Length: 329
Image (cartoon, rainbow, N blue to C red; front, side, top):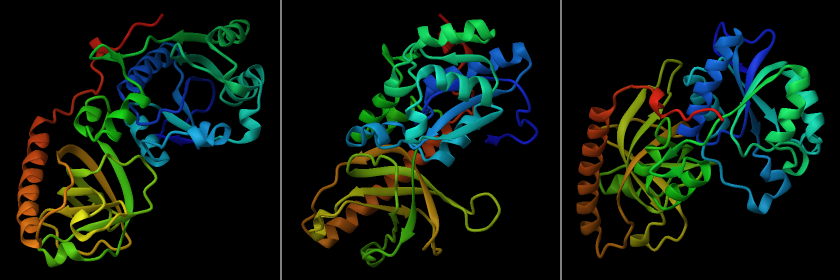
């Protein structure tokens, strides 16, 4: 269990169960209502999520690529004001539980749920055979409150993790960010690359061991952060990020290379977090190294401007204004 200091649940709690992948505005609306329900009952507000995604066990060929790592997901959920996040290992035994057994063992006995807040499409138990009607039937005799929140819509369409995956796969990270509670992030370990960027005057951090969905090939404006010591991130820079193969040098392997604007230090072996802000252009083959170098200078200038504008636009406001939270049904 991951809890905010001083907020560790010691008894009953109000619970929302879900994958919460991406932690988007729909999740934020659910959390906002969960906190209200928890406050009326004077209990902590807790989210239960799963690692890995249950689909990776039951339908591995169709399992979605994650939008968030588990640590990132926990941090974003706690930032929304939850008291705690429970990361439940998704095992064959858990996924084989009948809906009633899942309710009894996990929600009633383990979490001691006093209230639940879910979306209308919530499913649980073996084969996703449990639905809201079944859950309501289990809750009523135990006096467990159940609220069902209508999906949040933006631009006349529900906000969902699948919608976000489509946008990110298309490279429209700016549109995706408008549906997220924080910019879309890809994290990876910095490894040694071909060092071509350094010879061109634009050294890059080459990322490996990435587990989340990569945006479509292209050049992006981003913020890049890394912790070098024990303090908050020692590295926090605007970045121009290339995603995809390097066609100019006849490479076919997809790579992620980030040029941290104004940074001259050593990041090898560190974990770098890249927060994508907007797509600047497609990838393409250049006729010469000189043409590539000239374009890189344009990219770096455009990335710096985009990051500066994003900083000017940031308001620090609640990601889900109260007026946009859908009503319970």
